[in-house]
Image (cartoon, rainbow, N blue to C red; front, side, top):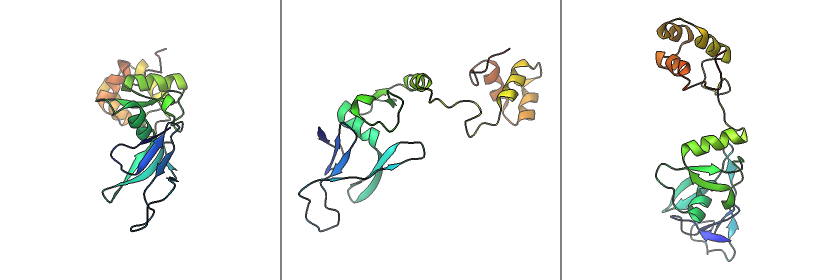
Length: 169
């Protein structure tokens, strides 16, 4: 089933996440008799996206957003798009749902795709550092200086707001 893409005349998206164009490939060319399937690229994060044109300007659009907006309606305020099976390249309408950030985080934990702790590329701490912080009686400001983080980071660790997958022993 194909539906017109909102805000992009001449484009259609299917329930399975395919995108096609009825626009001519070049300026001043005749419109095609058959639509042409658009090629997509995969972002470093694993999401599929396509180039669409509106009013002479190119826009890079993620395919799951196109599918969700077309088949599930516009994005609700503060909503994020959830891939229900955890596969970010499965852009079928039945696999997509608008939800809260918390629901999305719960999905990622359930699917095993939640990145936390040392694998986060911006992490300054190791799990061993966090264990030391949790067991230490030192002041937070002193620990912050030692590890190159803010005192607020130390406070969040100690209160279980961050690095909460590491438990006190």
